[in-house]
Amino acid sequence: MTDIQCMAIKASKDDRAFQILDQKLLPQTKKWITVSNTDEAYEAIRSMQVRGAPMIAVVGIFGCAYDVINRTHELEAARLDPLCVTKYTWKNDTFGTSNSFEEASEDDLVKYLTDYAVSALKHVTKSRPTAVNLGNDVDEALAMIEKSREPWQQIGNQLLDFAFDKMTNYQHADTEIGANGVEWTRKQFGNDPISVITICNTGSLASPGIGTAFGIVTCLHAAGLLKHVYILETRPYNQGSRLTAFEAMEKELPATLITDNMAAAIMQKDKCLKLAIVGADRITLHGDVANKIGTYQLAVLSRVHGLKFVVAAPESTIDFRNKDFSTVTIEERDSDEVTKINGQQIADPRIKAWNPSFDVTPPKYIDAIVTEKRVCAPADIPNVN
Ligand code: MRU
Image (cartoon, rainbow, N blue to C red):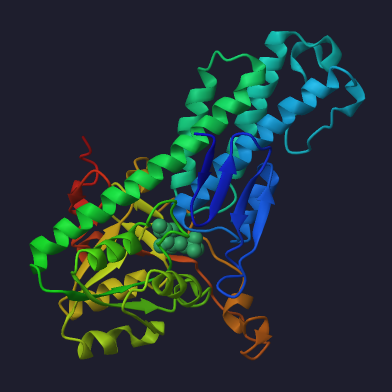
């Protein structure tokens, strides 16, 4: 397959760049932007033109892959004109032992492009700190590249194949998460349709397939098990109102948008509301879950009101290196996102706002974690087969 597409990304193996849907402009405007290298991918992730843990991972790897491919083409062109080789500031750009492209041997070029790919991959993981999928996928890509025996002209293509495989794997994972989530829900609540509540955007804009948590919501609807879905607006970035509400309307789901401070009220009012389903940006070995700010309060409210609280994520969201969040950075974003709405100042300009992008839900509030491989309690996270 040379082309691949999802709601947020279009890529072709025949091209030198890929396209992402600018999520900052949704739902009013659908604009595709072109990404051809590591720096552009980094900036698209940092500025949140693309977001959601799995989608960030895919965009990061694609950006590096096209970067290496473009660099390979530059080097091929430089065989005719050595002066056209540009140097990069974020990398120690030398050509092996010779330090000159004209004298570089095949081995030097393999080393050069391997180093280039490694630097690009390490660099892109710094774009946003909390979601772990990009870091986990980059570790896999680094292991592949470091033991690769490909000729220098093929290193970029190998990385692009890896990016295509990752995207396909995420698509399959979403489908399995959806099926596992439906099976678990049926076991808990039988065949009577229930209402659910969700936060942030975890659908097809956040993960290459049907989505994770919102993928389960979509599958519940298809299975006749969804009475209604309540979508939290998700201040301050409004992923709920801008993105999830849009996806819900596109998929013709029975949905209502509520502001974040209405969660307890709807739990009190709708007796069919039995389940909260959320995504994850990082799950530690102890089963702590970082997800969009507001997730923790949704978990606490769910416990108080007797709702089940479920986290849905692919296995690549598990951080096997950390037991908890004591050494993990929780991203804090500009206070303007809180004090302004659509660029317009709302709060007194003298006040500073605290704007953490994520919070951490302790395992005691989580009834189940649904991945593509299993449905488990947080305590069983380390016991993967
Ligand atoms: O800041 P964002 O929009 O990247 O945050 C996204 C979330 O918190 C999602 O819930 C998470 O990444 C899971 S996406 C399938």
